[in-house]
Length: 126
Image 1 (spheres, rainbow, N blue to C red):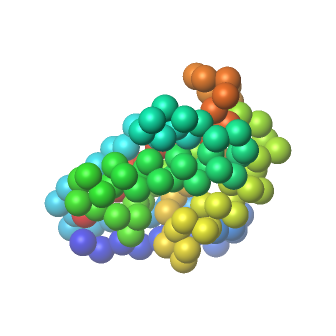
Image 2: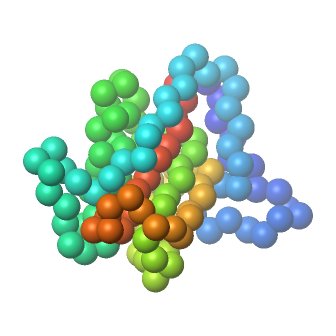
């Protein structure tokens, strides 16, 4: 499988993600539903940072169950309960993904449960 991050010169620069990701030769595609900041025991942390890291761990758990990893991610959509979490979200996405660039969309919206501050859905290919 070949992956190529694309950032058109005519568009604004992307900070910590790719504007587009081209994939060729993939055999499998995994669509991960929105992963919430709740652990297997039903607990939800209070802080945004803890919730965001937990939602990412839940994404990783789904990838692992499909014999994939973060390296297989090509697209994430992150839903934030408030725009004030934008910079923390960017920092934690970078912490989780390192130099692996994915197409990324961040949406500020109401989330199903008022205690959830973030939800992350993803697409992976292998």
